[in-house]
Length: 333
Image (cartoon, one colour):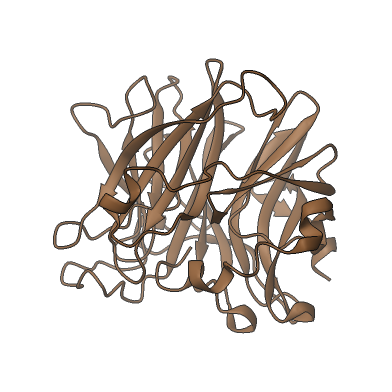
C-alpha cells in the first residue's frame, strides 16, 4: 500500500451496510487481502479500521466478521503520532498451534511506520479460546535513519524452518529480516537482506519515496524454489491506478531472486504476472496459497464499473513448463 494516500482514500469504501450480511467475492470492496483456512472456514484479513475480517466456506461468498482491534493498539499512537486505528496490509500465518497476524501502522507520506504482531489460538469467533493478544512492534522505520518503510509484512520460513519477515515499499525497496523462534522479534545478531528494489536512493528525504514504486512482497515456496511476488507502480488512485504484479525466484529465501530472463529483482528485474486492462486498470498486493491441492492467487483490483473501487479477486494459479506461475484471468474480463 502506497504510504501517502491509501488509508484516507479507502476508509469510506471498506464499510458499507450491505457488506455486513455477506457478499460475493467480485462485489467486495477490499484492499491488501490475505487468507487462511481453519477447518472448513476461510478467513480473509485486509486493510481497514482495526483490520477488516471476512469468513467464507467456499472462497466465493463472504461474511463480514468483527475487526481484530476495536481500539488502536496501545503502542501505535506513540510510534505514529495521530494514528487513528486504520491498519494496513496484514499477513496471517499458522505456526505451532498459534495464528500470527502481522500488520502495518504508518503515517502518511513518510516512512514513520511500524509492523506489529498479534496472536490467537483460533480464528473461529464463537470459540471460547478466541482472543487476540497483541505483542507490539516487530520492525520499525524511523525518519532520518532508514531508507525503507516498515509496512506490508509477510512471514515466510526458509528451507531449515527458520522464520523470516519480508516487508517494505518505495525508497530502497523490499527487505527481509530474520526473526527469532518466538516469531515476535528480530533474531540476534540481526540478518538483513534487500530482496527487490527499483532504485538506489541514498539521498532521498524521509518524506520523498522517489520513483521506486514497489511494495507488497509475498514469498511462496514451490517445486524447490522460493517465489517472490511484488506489486509495481501505483495503487490507490482508482481509475488512474496502474498497479501490476511481478515475480522472481531463488533457491534460497534470502535471494537473489531472478526473473525468467535472469534479471535480479534487487537490480530492477521481475517477470510480469498480472497487469491491468480497461475494466480493471490496476491490480495487485497479492497473496498466494495452496488450498485443497490447488494454488490460489488472492489480490485486489480497481473496478472501472464501480468508480474505480477496489474489489476482491480470487484466481487459480497454474505453472508452466519452466515452473513460472500463470494466473487465470477469467474473472478480469
